[in-house]
Image 1: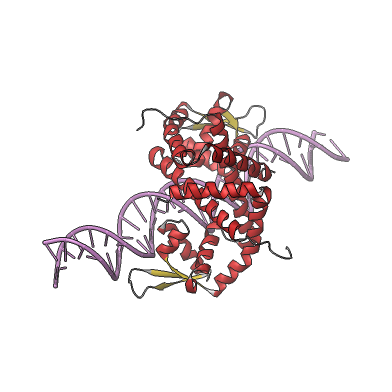
Image 2: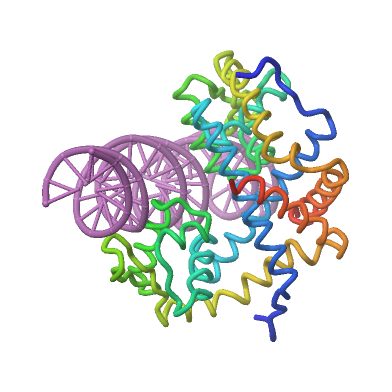
Length: 152
Length: 152
DNA sequence: CCAATGTATATGAGAGTTCAAGTAAAATGC
DNA sequence: GCATTTTACTTGAACTCTCATATACATTGG
């Protein structure tokens, strides 16, 4: 409990509401595009990207959860559904009997490859195309700062 | 269909991943705080704020949906649950028989008042406290730009 | 070696979101 | 003035996410 609240002043309030509006509109646009054109939510896309970049397209569940900034539970459910689609398969880890690898299948890689162009195009349309180079640098800087602060 | 994809270069890729990481971490922190201390998700908080600022603490459902950047369906479900908690009540609109008002109850206002300090504190901790004034101005500018682009 | 504790992941239930219909009242057109 | 279309909102089902709990293996301490 804090003695008194440091309320947002008018400028901060405006900034905060612009931030919430912009980010929500952006994610809504991304999810709509991915769902419409590739039948997957953004979180699944991120998981597939993570696996596609990993050595041998495989990663331990917990590692992948960290990478995708997902809870272990969410990842487990998500991988279960990706497995049903044949895009990912699980393999028991030989060194650690508790562990599992998530492995990207060829079908999964193909699905990602098919989804990527439309997704990237949407990211450009919604973000990079509307900002000038200076703004993009500033955004990178801001996000890196916030990220490093919240990551621990 | 586009002839060829304008892929993200390394800088853009980094910026984009920082953006996704930062925003997701931020919303995760907000939701955790609100859920833990006030038993509501951020979307409900936004709805309550909207109503609290409206004349007579009431708004038409569609107006409120637009304000909160929610689909009509999502809002309808959310208001139904807020109604169960006694925080909001619905009233039929006299001028338009199809319409409904969502009205913030005194209990709802009290719940919002109780939730606000902790929420604002979290917004500060996670965002404003980690950025310098220049970055905050830049962020406002960027978000306003993205917002106006995506709002139509 | 074995009990106790810790770690990696899975699972089930509940809550929230989306999508596709559904209902009911208003506006439109002839 | 009545059929048609549009608008405002609701509903149900399917899906995703969260939280608490369970499971199974690994590690540690005596």
